[in-house]
Length: 603
Image 1 (cartoon, helix red, strand yellow):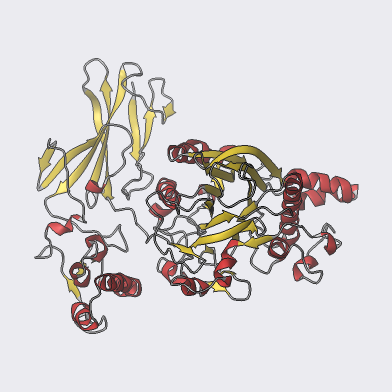
Image 2 (image 1 turned 90 degrees about the horizontal axis):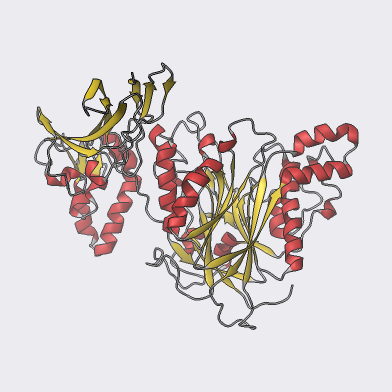
């Protein structure tokens, strides 16, 4: 007979919007063990599995800490309440939690104060100085007078009318009847219960005991402050993206580049500082999707997209938002794991803004084979290939704009755009391989440029810091013969250095912050640039490394930068130690630029 051997949840901390999928281990009638579902529509040997989810609502209201959402709150900031800051952000689990968060928490107060233009004296009276005994904090066990209806964490409880069961000050509401369940805002602060039982298909009665799991209290999904789009023309937009998600001026388009950190690399060993629930793929995927969709970019270049996640999640989900998808999986000559978990580059574009003309795939392994056949003595071929074959790829898409670029000569002419999306080899000791991969990509793009006068974008994670040889080749079109990176060349593939050139007039989009005039947001952004390279201080921030590895390059003779997504401040990320964190689900930050096509001038 069918029986349930074991039931457990991969993560016991449920988060709003994150699907919960219990692991149910079965013994089938033939004594084999399986995890397959046995629904009522396809019973096994006259039996099927029935699932139920309940929300356990205690009569006592519970608030959740705004910093550590898996912890119950024990104190509330009165300053937040008086300043009408969302109540969920006012709760803390301990005085230490509040003091540690104060530097960032006070920004909420400052924003609220400037929004209503309060004077300084009143603010002082409201919040007090944190170091003084008053501190503006009420410390209660949240069972006294502070336990008002506001402690529902800001959500209006809309529970089903039918009360399923009630016992000892608890009410159980049935919330689901399938194997999976996605917590809603109504579940915040409550424990969920999962039940699984074998049912007789004829009598519809349970057979054997009911297997149950209780979760921790449901926590709200962290919501980082939206990043603003900042004009580099001195005309400040400063706003968030408009209701259509785009700046409405004609002839402009936005491009996003983002290494989303593949699940296969997101291990608790590497990122031990990130809570396990925030590192889990069910949480990260919905948080990444929310962030990506929120930018509403016309073109999206993602790196480290696992092939199974592309097919099962990102392609179908972004399709719902009007995006067409292109994908290039890494080659797998080195990779020893499951083929489905190999990552690659994914490029998405809005169907209402662009149409697909052509796709080119660059496999650096194939280029390595050609190179070794041509220049490496046969006795050294194996050594050379071991060094050069690293599975990295690039995906190049030629798109045609569906919008018009006003003021351009030849108004009837097609507006094409070439977008390259790549992820260059990560190993720091293989400086020659990184440079060779970038040079190979540049040669390929030059061929496309020679066949069509076409604006170009080169996006991705180049695993090269500003000032390195790959960055110099991209930004300057050449590498100085005395560059220290050229000392690492055991195969002699970088000689002579004079061949390391390209003719594309590439400029890094984020360097526009350094060149442009004055504006409300520009000064703050300039402070987030490295003054020697005019690149961001970082695009990758882990506990052990902080620096810039990601870029959006554009051909400056055919495109101009209109605005850029603001850079993040290191201090704001360090409150969670580093990336990834509950707020930001990759160890990289997203880069986004808005471009305008310039009147065409033959290169």
